[in-house]
Figure 1 (tube, rainbow, N blue to C red):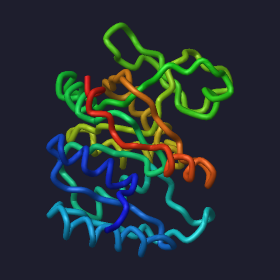
Figure 2 (cartoon, rainbow, N blue to C red):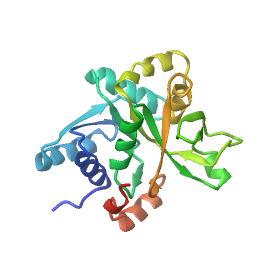
Figure 3 (cartoon, rainbow, N blue to C red):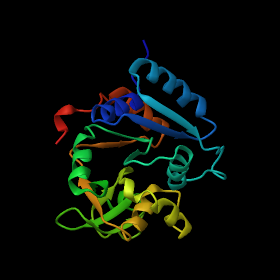
Figure 4 (cartoon, rainbow, N blue to C red):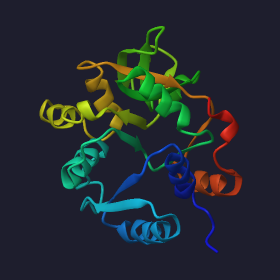
Length: 225
């Protein structure tokens, strides 16, 4: 029996929230790993899973996170609301609350969590929000953060906003970090920020990955609120 992976935890949770199809964008180097996983997952779950090769082989020719999303939209002709998750992060709570929040707000939405460490704020997106969670200002990796609301790479994009990817890229939006697009997008249309009810774990190193493999026990259903 195969050990359940972090990707399994995420996909199983999101599928349980009503999402029926999944797209994984991989660089060319690791394509076979994700393809093999997808084959096993499709066989065991019946889920619709597509793996795309963005053709990148190193940092010099990578598309960047924003162009990877646009690549998926254009390659598959995606025309629906999109839940986008960065693959090097995991959460200990269900996405159910986030999806319900997005449905209530009826806008593109991001997540936010309080971060008191200024150095950590300088390495992530930082949002200024009003009392209703509307983003008033967003900055990716600010030198002088204007709030303590850190924005991790988990996004819900409204179907009606998908055309903004092409416009944003043509307008000169930075394409490496996905938060750069939200920074630009929040100036074009309403974007709300959901306060996370649990923890996020960043798999930014081999050591971090090994620690999560040993300690991560999955999504705590009790924290769905």
